[in-house]
Image (cartoon, rainbow, N blue to C red; front, side):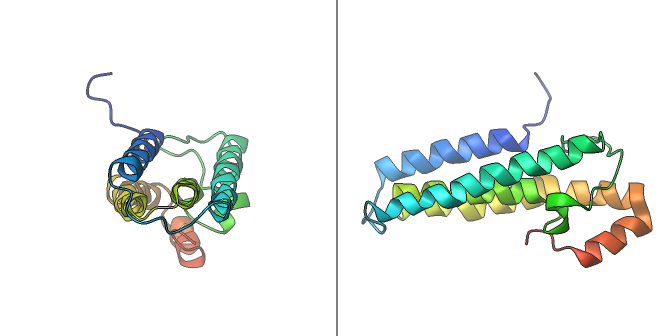
Length: 149
């Protein structure tokens, strides 16, 4: 749809494609040999589970999962006790898992770019909206819980 902003899952999918492309086009030396690269399944699975749990935490209180939409509630339980943005953390874990599975250095360059994009495009805006909507409750939560981990 024209004019609609890309949502975080699209950034994740683009990042996955770029990581795989870099792996095949510019692999560099094999850093993590088989079968050790299979350890990447652990962060990949953890990231997926974290996203499912965090999504469920938002749905329990009937608030939006979409960035840029006004939240109906400030969630500070479940995955949100550990991280203010567990879904973005989950995405980063998925990317780390993929980088380990691929086992070469070039896919790793995507991860810091992804983190910076999430910070600048989504997190800063979301946190500003939460501050406007929930004021002191948000400030208390922000002081208790780290942005990532």
